[in-house]
Image 1 (cartoon, one colour):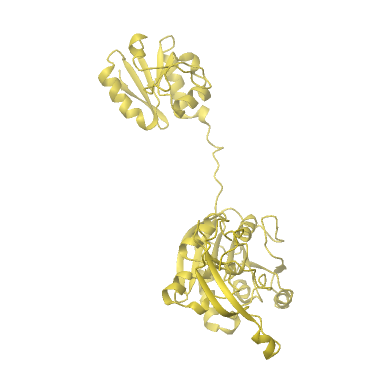
Image 2 (tube, one colour):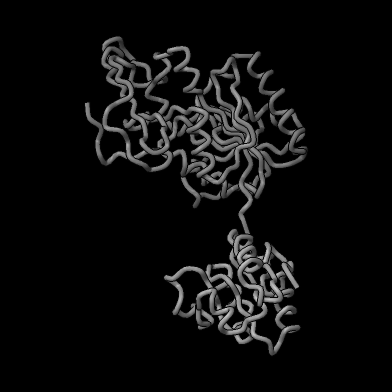
Length: 383
């Protein structure tokens, strides 16, 4: 059986391997779809085919999701042991991230099994769910819920943004998990922590649990593929653990803080200031910069110091005889330091600066002063 070439990975949108990872026959059409008659039930089975992404490695079904994939259906309410475990887990989570009286979102709250636990732990718990009957059940329990499916980043939740979230045993059901995670991220405060749980493919493979593959679960995560999906959806993974006898992968994450360099002012920084002072002190004297790389070229243009320089020297014949972009300074061979009687050199060549400094010390005794740009400051080689 060959995969449809148009099908792409649910996580990274990469190409899917043509040959299936696994083909199972006579698999029930769904885990929650039951026949009204025996005859009807006998017709409710077919093939289940698993594929692997050639890019990120995620194992997944190419088939369409079950009709009720947006609804959370869980049996937690009948397991007092699991409910106690969850209460302990949530309490530790709340204590670790100091979430008392904070707003915590449950993505896919079902009939409120876990939302009810959160309500006991001094937080402002809010759940989202697609199923109308589940929403009605939650509201009858006095729980804060919203009937909505978090399909994309365009969706805005009523009580957002949230301080934290839980997303338990639901992600594997979704045909576009990355879209949902990005939608979740847009409804969280920056740095918001969360718990994400999915069944562990590592465990299924280790124990050869072939019967755990079902049409309801569209994706099967290993630690590696879950890490990749979370990282590309705007979350930093703090921990990734195996829980419930290794059957479940439990990731603790935080919404990534956007990087900003706007607070850096290169024109006012220490290096710019020291270079200006250096050139002002030696005003009227011929000064050359050694290095026609990006560091020197950018600094010359941004710092506005071209008029105080005689030339740029560089060891690369491919650059010699040309002119520096932005400043228009000529790029000359190192030998011109001697022929042009250059006595002062400013070295700006990144990782090559140490090697150039040694060359100056050895081969250019006429150069009486060398200043080297090192990270954010100047240091003087010889005087």
